[in-house]
Length: 285
Ligand SMILES: Cc1cc2nc3c(=O)[nH]c(=O)nc-3n(C[C@H](O)[C@H](O)[C@H](O)COP(=O)(O)OP(=O)(O)OC[C@H]3O[C@@H](n4cnc5c(N)ncnc54)[C@H](O)[C@@H]3O)c2cc1C
Image (cartoon, rainbow, N blue to C red; front, side, top):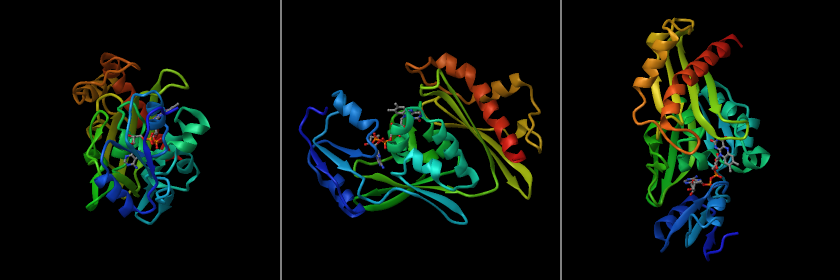
């Protein structure tokens, strides 16, 4: 139960939402699916004078064109699972299938909410960076677009200004093969480390190989592993060399109650390799 008084606003247009967020006096929170925010308010960890609820803005749903897959920021994990998508956006389906918390969380938690929360131990940030996603941010002064790599600034910190909300996430379509691997303590726990691998192809040839790691640092880390694989994607370096390359990219590994930084540093190479190996299976399907 939320024990502090607040005003609940439910704008019907983006303009109304921007004006509210830019003009309200007092502390204000944006409400997505509420799976993180509402329990935190119930526990008294977060208190606000105003809550701006996004549910009437029509920001749910997945649409696909020849060039990209577009997700409204309020699209739930369940809606991602049900959507007919192809190309790199398939990574989000893999991710949604493995989100813990059961049907309630999948039916309520949103991709835009998870991105905006920017928890390092979350599946969403690294997957968005790996797929080259772009986010539309809407505020009192209009819309701007940023890449996912620009969006995540630090742990629990994004480039969103106080009057801005995420409205759309767009993922380019191409021939890339993808792989996803998540390391967690148990079936019901959050990820300790995730790997989102992308094997880009031009005319059927592997042209770039990357693995984006989530959970291992404050923000997602992308490692170019093109030099470590052959044209079929098979590793041409030893496991040790691979792990050393990954480790070189981990500045200040993330430390929280799930796992210490030293553990994350140690497992990052294996997580990246397992994600990469899935791109080969993806190509065989
Ligand atoms: C039991 C449980 C299990 C979970 N398991 C996993 C897991 O396995 N992997 C994983 O990655 N995550 C997991 N999560 C986290 C879950 O993914 C997030 O709680 C959820 O996605 C947040 O989305 P939401 O829409 O509910 O956000 P909210 O709780 O509504 O908001 C989260 C934050 O983002 C802001 N916000 C929300 N939407 C927007 C927007 N469109 N624009 C700007 N700001 C916005 C809010 O102001 C708030 O600060 C789990 C959570 C629970 C409770």
